[in-house]
Length: 184
Image (cartoon, rainbow, N blue to C red):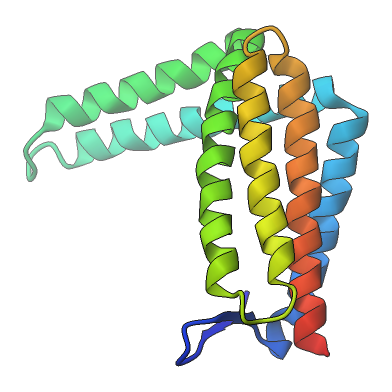
């Protein structure tokens, strides 16, 4: 994404980067619609993806701890951190439903903080056109986060798939709106 930060401090997508923003926005909308149509599959895919990220992260942390043990302090802490990350990834891979319930809380917090950040971003770009789309996305993310936390853990499976799908669609929409403005 190509952005500019002009003297007034407003955020804008440049014309050169607007095509990729349109493509990215459309892909986010498509993935969001698929998540809405198959929330259980989307939740399982999310949990398994997250598990593999943790497993890889744990392996890299362990390798770094071993590789740097002579030159850096804290070998034991680095090793323990890597082992815990690896164990968490394996646990989610082995028991994905418990991982989905945990991810529901994680997604809830992520959406809450991401929503707050997008509300702040919306007010930073407010003099520009279509800032309301970013504000809408931020407020929607905050609302989704609250719904996840209220329904946890009973409806974690549906929340991960459905509500993340809505968030993806909303994010795709504001990216397309900003890119369309840059092209005009």
